[in-house]
Image (cartoon, rainbow, N blue to C red):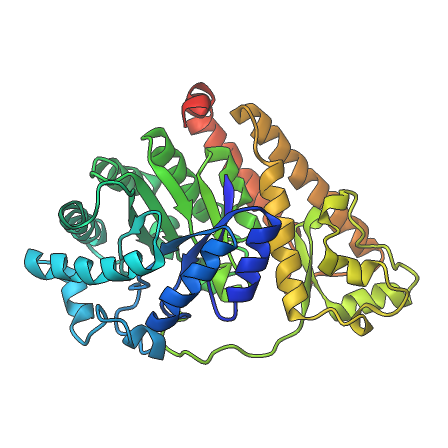
Amino acid sequence: MELYLQFGYGMKGITCELSRKWQETYVILSPRDISPLNLANWSGQFRQAGTQCLFDTQCYYPDATSPNLLQYTYWDSSLSEKLLHLSDKGWTKQFLQKVKVYNDKAETTGYILPSIMEPYEDNWEKRFFTRTKNLVEAANEVYQKNKPIFMTLALPAKLLQGREENIEQLMNKLLKLDVEGVYIIAEPPEGQYLVDDPAWVYNILKICAMSKLARKMVIYGYGNHQMLALALTKIDALASGTWLNLRHFTNRFREAEDIKRKSKWVYYPEAFSEYKMAFLDWAYNQGHKDALTPRDKVFMDDSFRKIMKADIQPSQTGFNERDSFIHYLMALHHQVELLRGNSYEEVLAAYEMMLNAARIENERLEKIHVYPQTRGFSEIIDVNRAAIEKLNEGYGLPLTMEWKNL
């Protein structure tokens, strides 16, 4: 599993900087956060930094009104109605031709097909399969054969919290379609950043396992550290970003100016938890300056070192939002690396060790009265453990047998 960058507001410089640090990376570009003019200009700078590009049309809510989206030629007043039904094959091909123009400008390495985040209601599976099938058929006529095509699975929370039999039946049909890859967008229940429903986590793991066993490339979009569990299915990439709305899927497409100044959070990867700067100051003032010093020194990137190496309150070190973002993504990148293994059993053991360490670290910090508040992982540990145990029951053997070939 690799870490891709989910592009969002203000991420151009960070994308180039991280790509240089990592030698190479992939970014999934968002037309909501980049104008058509800048798409061509910036993609050249990305390439110079060693960044490969993909382009997500962001059609999840086709009535969106973000100014940048409205500048793209494929975005018009009829988009919502036509994408919901796709009964006109001629229109579908013309739509994909317009999207192809932007893929060409960005020199993308593959084509991500659009998808709508439709509420889960009666006959949702039938409607979703029909739309996806029509898009795939049109894409295979429009797009070049030298690039992989990814069908986007925009999956509502109620589906992912429902019966796994329904999901299995749908996936069995979808995985027969003529595409090389799957791009998964999962709506969290009630907008949760860290999801407390094991069924939701397990069903995503199941979808990824089925897709990989069907020899599809898999990218999971809008992810965070909770989804490191996906390494057990050997997906190709987990995509994450800076702002919270790039680390879990939300409807961020209606208003363009939704970036607000909020409290700075600092990710402590060995606890899978994030802490407000006020609690780092609290730890410092209580004589626990090194409470969040990681045992694994790779987590001590330049941004985090600002806090750990200074003998002043963390809030006075100049650690800013950009530092917070870079530290989170650097730490997540290293955690992804730690979960690469030569076998399913090896990755499972490594992830279980991470969960055990996270429990110990959260308890240790709580004993000295340092709490992560709304971004704590203590209650999520059992959620993820239940999900991976269920995955192991149903898919452990085939993943073990096929690991080398996935």
